[in-house]
Length: 64
Image (tube, rainbow, N blue to C red; front, side, top):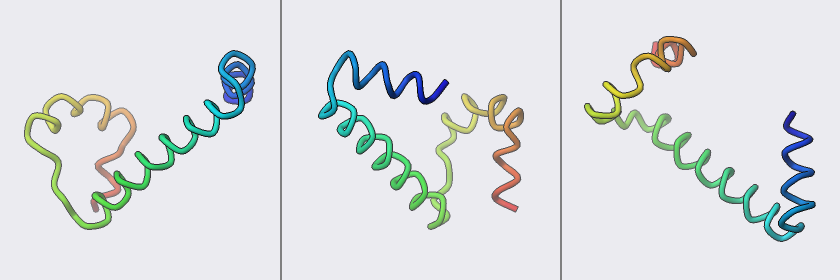
């Protein structure tokens, strides 16, 4: 599925847009990783809105 999505972006938008999209994803991932690693707590409103998905994905287990 991921390969198909990559191919569609390259086909429909071109190689430059594909590289830009990859850079945006990598940048977002880096920021989140740094925040998590530094112990920055999740804001209250985000905690409430993401409670169910964090439970399903067992994300909170990473804090332990």
